[in-house]
Length: 589
Image (cartoon, rainbow, N blue to C red; front, side, top):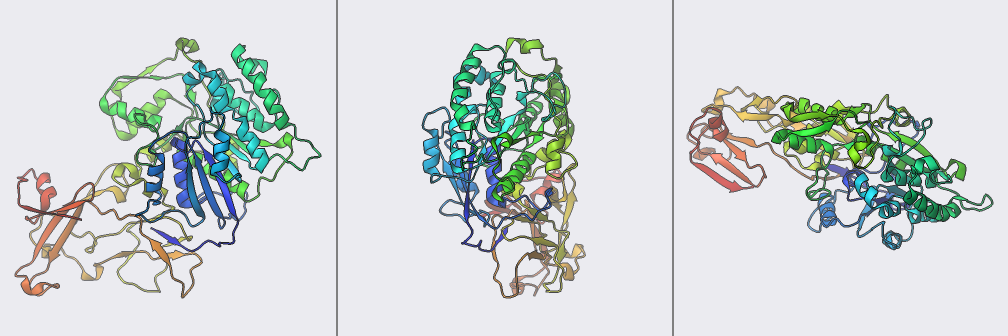
């Protein structure tokens, strides 16, 4: 459910370009910005102590390469299809997919400029060739895609800062808890070198890589030389020129973990959304799997990555990152979680949380030089205190939290992904049985915020018993029918009937205003009940000869209802191991 008020149409429109939009992080980020707006959520700390502005209008341009399902899935999720209601936050004017943006081609920048009308205000650069193996075997493509000088040239021309998601693989991996402003960078593979080179472009540094960082590779030296010839004129901004370098942000990301992507068909056919889903699949199948015990990273939760990007995006749009000189053109942050974890640590964390048999987990030692495969840094865990302080947190979330939030997510409880992006949840403990202006608000929200509201049935749950499930909150517990012959067997105070959740106060609403409320989804429990209380009760009381109660079940896909012609319903019979072949009525819903 969302409430809306019109955003001031005289507010200037700002344009946000997101590259790599169809990837795992890109889909999560677009969903979050489109549904919740640009400003950090009220639950996030505002470290600068400033008022958060989110009253402007924003256009989001989503550049992606070739995922065939992306545009349709995005329109479906955001309610932009012709027969649906838009779910966009009031501050988001439009979300525009820009397809066939291939950073290895010569015309990618022309396509982006044509698609976004020639200019943008901020660039969130996620696009990358992120497979170390592919980069090692295809260095020319890796350099062109991962060090996109034309994108940087465009950012200078339009004055748009770049929020750049780099990688922890710029570090050598010979120590633990690297500090971004102290420890040197020394990538060991082509992927890390190309990502570090673009950092240097944004930092205004020359050369892009030194001899040690090139690792003695002639191929790498050739690319560095060629790219430096192009990059140097861009970096040397004339101090007498009116042109200034927009301040960019570099986020050195660790391995990103979290729930599946919000779009229906995901990122890539046949792949797992994140490493946690791969682990879960292997554990459930019992397939013996090797996990390194001596390769460490500061794994990060996808929602923390989004919070970080949102923080710097909001700063840029609100003028908190004013143009600066080339010597101070960017800031660098390690972006990871608080846990230094090996692959086997991750596997054991999933097994423990889901109570799955860990016997298929084989802890193995990664051989030196990675067994002749692509070089891989053994320990690139990072100190992330700088980012935590910037975000106003005591610390970043760790592995235990990441696993819990991933697998206890509503995504795994038959809820659409939309629910994950609710700015608030009001559960059914906050109820009244009357409507009155004297009731104090149970929740205050801003216009346009997405709210998940939980309700009771009309009998306040009196005819169901709670079936506990370990590790789940109250909203995802199942309630099973009570095996009773008539409604009178349960004492139900009629004053408790028809409970309503709330009230909810919308900030800025005044007496006489009309609130526009959009109901995006209604998700009933899988069990329901109907009853009457004897002759004369209800609209058809003249036809009733005795009290009765009937339970019904709603199909998992919420397309049909089955009402059992026996008072207890099918679930009650299953629970008692009795005959299920009973007369029933099925009708669509």
